[in-house]
Image 1: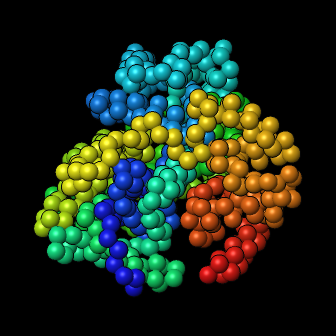
Image 2: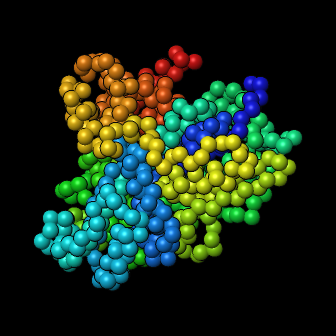
Image 3: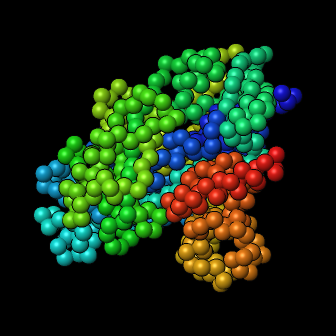
Length: 503
């Protein structure tokens, strides 16, 4: 075991909340360690609906403050990361069998005005028989609405927060669970163990932040030996990926008979991402799987509205995530608040800050509020700073991706458009760290298939903690969707050889 190192903040959990808190704290001048038992974003934070949104349906549960804060954050995040967050227009076909049209329109009016919308266009009413957005919709639906929200590459949002934290001095440990955390003489002694190498590290920390998501209660009880009056509800959300079955860039939002809504979004160019479900969950949060009932539920919701009927055979991939929601006593999983709650326990002069709930859209605000709660522990730390700070790769002129895309085209005229788009959307202004001085595709090294070249894989291993092939193929990128089984196996062999050589 390494000699114990003194730090201000020890963060457990490498999802969006843990990475966001580590980044915010490092930027305030605190010494920070972030440990994650698996890969960054391997749990809930890479298995979301991939939207930065206010949560239109939360208005129905009178969550006006939550929706307002999320809508404000939507604009903040668009400016911070325009390469991985961009606008979408959602078409909502109206069904007279569900919510009345006046109620939907009122909800959209509030959605347009609650958060001080500046960058996105507002709602408009559609004639689905006349407007092109209605072309794929069944003829029985004649009226619809179109409104704005944003897409986000959720796993990359987590990684970019971790990258920024590390560049501001934080230590980021992946595949390194915290095996013990105990209070000793007014501080915490925290021990991590690398699950790939077996190396143990010890840290003496002023404060521990528990941002373990679905495992937050487990960390409180088993790792820290503490207690909390707060509880979480585990709710599983599942998605299916199918070939895209409509023309145009717009997304769709459809109402189901149970009053839930289903998002149908363009995904990775020629595919569609459909979800999510909301079902109580009591299994292993590390490896949830979609059920047959969930598959039927999603297919039925789509087929209720669209002319082209989806079948099980159309499904290319599925994924499920477990959301740890703050338990507010609601019986219906869809009604449980998506707000976040902190529990600060200051026993024996060694504070433990537990984070319950939250959603991707409000992670930055959550992180800021979490550090504000610790201001009395760190009276000399810096003030709030993340509101106007770009994430790595997002420092482009006027936060305008279209302007940046033209610059990228001028800088790399030899690069195929699809590859430029891939690099631009994932790495933004840091594309040069991958392409380097290459003047042709041969300069990017071995080609593994699709848009995956050796240069990108090496960058992810060196700069973004990719330690296993799936870290590259599924979380840092989505190359897995476009590589054959043989190509994935060849990449895994290459990756293993590189890792062994570096060891």
